[in-house]
Image (cartoon, rainbow, N blue to C red; front, top):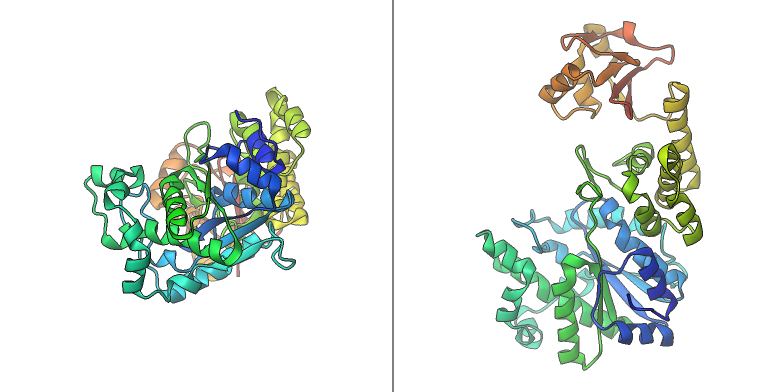
Length: 415
């Protein structure tokens, strides 16, 4: 491992953020001479980012904390095409209105990690230049610098073609636009580094080549590893869907629980990547064994939730979990789903109730969970899949507690 001299690269190295760097010595020297301006691009394919994007957000945060200037580049232009890298099929095309609405949600996340008001960090939208390009001029001035032969050699393209999946001309242009973003940011801000996940290496290298040809400038690339859990699950994804960073798409309690359920082997790695805790404290927690590792998981969950949702919200989620699992109490802060009171008066089928609560994906899945003894109503195991919930099942708090396994709980509240 390279012994970096600059604070930023040293932090990234010791915390496990670095997968590849185009010129390690040159970039280290640039950070020592500093300050350096660098960017990561985020396309607006959904109203929120999910936990899989946290590693990139934290890289930008550490840039700011070590005295450099990060740019969060919003993909208002590139989202109109969609990055085809390592995907089997094209993304659904979104309208400009959809993209702009998604960007509004994504921007809220960054304000918790980066200081845009003081100018220590920048948020820029590539729609500012990409949506107004003259196609013929762009082909002449930019497109002529790209070799189709080289573009076809990148793994991100070869994978799609090897699987005999169609790659549209629209998608093929994505790497050209991403390379042009790098040049445009250099012209506007002096940006010399693009960072991203390891699946972006080919696209970033294209930008380096383009910058050299168009601006005679030295650009750099730095990528982070694409993370999976120790069991191979993709980060930021669960059986029930994405682990969103927006509270209105995933409750802070469920977000806390996602990290609380981290596999033992991942605790140290995630503490390094997703928290700002000192390395000495991380080492202490990582050394815990047996049941004590659960305390480290609770700290991990609370620290990550505090970064995204605030310290008070994180502590409230931790307390809700403690009451639910350690005291067996019915915590009012559990996720709540409202249902029309008339449905209970008529009798609501239990299978449908668990689907409505998001604890099962379908009636069939709920039926299998009943057979496996995994579902409970007000902490009583559910044995009859034909049972109906009625007003008689309401607790003294006026709710019905549905549980799947030991860790997933939802309150049904009639309104």
